[in-house]
Structures are given as structure tokens and as C-alpha cells.
Image (cartoon, rainbow, N blue to C red; front, side, top):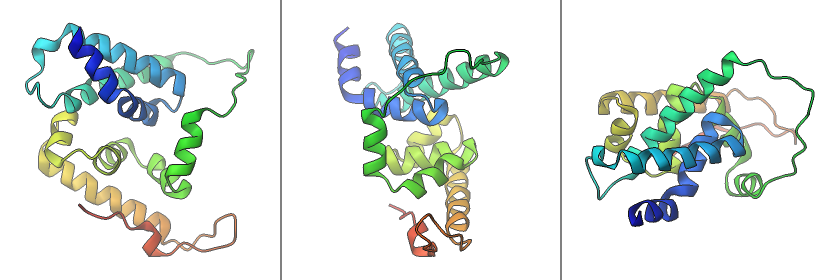
Length: 178
């Protein structure tokens, strides 16, 4: 139980951010993370590297997100009760801490490129840890990172204007390789 409490303190916000990139709904993302913590606690014997649980927890969160998205795709949403939401603290934080255009471009990437980009640049996972979390080879992760960066670069070098009439330069699209 102490281990679970420690994980919640250490990783809850980061896992919720990963879940949000899949769910695009703060409430569902929070539910996914809570369920992931319960599943992690119940299957703690499967953890191979107890000193580095984050990639394992990310894998659980991703699997739950994918399963939930599959489930909700089959359901037909209705607009009978439109959701009344104000801006959450997370929305404000994301808006202030990340360049809005870069974030939108990353979210617009195909999932197979988006997830490695987010885990590498925003969650500071190594290629090896991402490979473990996504159940891919390290080479596949490197390829997806490179192709994701190329898509982002082409998104920003198209010469489209933003709301202020400024054009994007390729320097704004650089994601620095660590």
C-alpha cells in the first residue's frame, strides 16, 4: 500500500497528462489513471524494474486508454445534456507552459508518432523506456520520433499564417534532440 501511495505522489500528474493526450477529456483521463493505479497495485508482481516503475505505469495507462476509446467508439453520444465546463487548472497550465501551436500540432499527429514524441520530449523518457512502454523495438521508437519530428517541421514550414498574420518559420518548429 505504501508503494501505491508513493506512485500516486510521484506519477499521478504525469500519467494524467499521458491519458489526456489519448482521451482529450480531463475527467476520463483522471478516471483512467485511478484505474491504472488499482491495476498496477493488483499486478505489482509483474513489474520487472521496481526502481523504474514509470514506463510500466505508462503502458498500463495507454492500454486502458485504448480499451476505453474502443468502447466509446461503439457508443452513440447524444447532445441532450451539453456539458457545462469552465476552464480547468490543467487547461490554464497547458496554455501557459507550452506553445499553443506546437501543442496543437503534436496532438494532431497520428497516434503512433504522437505518443513517442510526448513521452520523449514532455515526459523525459529514454528511447529504451519508450520502447518498453509501447512494446516496440528501440529502432522503431527512433524511427517514429524522427518521422514525427519531420511531420511537425513540415506543419510549421508550410508558410501558413497564424491568428496574428505572422508566418511560421522553421526555427519555431525545431524540437531539440537531447
